[in-house]
Image (tube, rainbow, N blue to C red; front, side, top):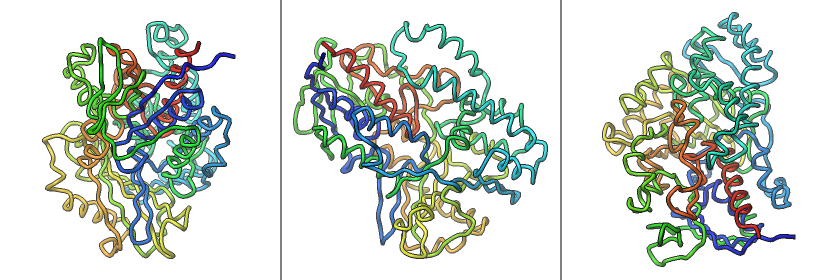
Length: 497
C-alpha cells in the first residue's frame, strides 16, 4: 500500500481551516507545524471570559455539522468523543421594526404561519421559495463546494458550466427574493443570508438563498462549552496526531528560492518546509509576506481590485438579568434595511440604523453566565477598515447608539452590565491580519467575487497553498473547515508515491 512522502508542512494560522488541514495531513504522514500569531488557537474565533461570563468572539451560528464531523471521520475518529454539537429546536428569532416576530422553528408551514400575521401573500409563497432554496443548495453541494477549482480542467468541466447557469449567477439575492415576496420584513429576514458571506443582498448572487434551506431544514446547532470548543476539539486531535502548534509566533515572510517556497521566517528563526499552507487571509499573505517580485500573477493592483467583505462591531455584555424577548439567536431589524448596505459598502461608515444580532449563549448553556444572568454577544455589520471612519475615535459613541436602539426593543438596563467589552474591525485587523479588518476576506458581491475567488494554489510560487475564506469555496465556519480538508486531500494526492 502506498504511503505519503514524509514532507514538511508549515501552516500559517491556527483557525479552523488550518487545523482541519493539519489533522488530515498529519494522519497521512506529513510532518506538520502550525504557527499562530495570537496567543491562543482559533483565528477569528476566540473565547473571552470575565467576571464569570463566557463569550465566543467570532462565529456563533453553527450549521452543516457533517462538515465538522468529516474532519474526524477522515482520520478514523468520532466527533462526539471530542465535542458535543446538538440541534436547537428554537434557534433564531427575527424581530422587525413594526413589532412582528418570526421564529425559525418547526416546519416550513410553521414559519409561513408566522409570516402570515403580517403578509398572507408572502406566507403563501414561502414553501415554494423553500423548494428553490433546496434546489440551489443541492447544486452548490454537488458542483461547487466539494472540490477545488485549481486549473482549466476543473473550471471547464461541462457539469460545472451547466450548474453555473442554473444558479442564476447574474441575479442578485434580493431580485430572486422579490419573485416570491413583497413585504419588507420577509425581504430583510431572507436577504440577511448574504451577510453570512460578508456581502449585501442587493449585490450578492441568488445562490445564497440556499442558506435559508441550510438553516430551516438542515438545522442550526449549539456547541457545548461554546463555539470555541470546536477549535479546541480540532487542536486536541491535531496534537494527538503529532502536529506541532506554536502560538504567539508571527510569520514575517514566506521564503522563496527560484520560484519555489522553501519555508517561512519568523522573528526568531528561519523554518524550512516543502509546503507552506496559509490559513490566514490570502490577500494579506500575498501583500505582507510575499515580496511583489515573486508574485507577478497577484500584484498589489490585483489585490486592491477585490472588494473586502463587511466587518463587524462587537459588544460583549455580561449582565445579571434575563430578557424574555431573546432566543439563543435574535435579530432586530431596522425600518430601512437597504440603507445599511449603502452605509457599509458605499459610504464606508457604520450603519446609522443597524441590524443588531445577539447571541445569548446562556440560554442553551447555563455555564456561560452566572445564575440569572445573560452572556450577550452583540454584533452589528460594519465597513472594512478605511480612512472614512476611525473606530479609535468613535467606538464608545457608536456602542451607545447600539445600546440605545436595543433599549427601544425593551432591552433596558444594559448600562448596568457587569461586563462590557467592545471589539472593532481595526482590532480584528491587528489581531488576525484580516485584510482591512474584513471578516470573510473578500465580499461575495457580484459573480466574480463569488465564483472566481483567488486560487488555493499560488500560480507563481510552487509549494504555497491557501485554505481560508478568501479562497474557494468561500467563507463561513463549516466551509472553511471543508476548505482545509479539500486542500489537504490535494496535497496528499500530489505527494503519493
